[in-house]
Length: 188
Image (cartoon, rainbow, N blue to C red):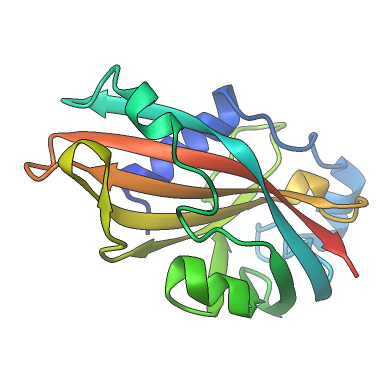
């Protein structure tokens, strides 16, 4: 399931964009299912909102080219605000549906899964990566992936912290830039 793009987003979450706080150990123990803490997200309807400006990370042949991607906004990437519904069909799946997702991710229903083996004491991140061509980007790149990540450490709070991201690759696939937008889901 894990790709380079997902690892970049997870690295960004751990270093540059801090999400939530460490989960409560008592809650983790109560939710344990076969060694997995279970799905901590409450099902229901949420308002999804993305925030400009982006956080940009570039590497490989695109290293130090962050300024070329910093002008991208959530609007230019179709990361639009809207109403979404969370459903938890299993302890390790979270289905997020909504029209706004169809515009940004090419599918109005996304199935998020927990990251395997989160670092001890850190909240678990749940995410999905959609790989397809989302169009051209700066410096002759192509937007090849869109990523949505939710922070389980914020589940049950007044809002769920999240990140929406777009990964751009050069034609030779020797350089990438990831454009990350902070987001939140607020219960309605």
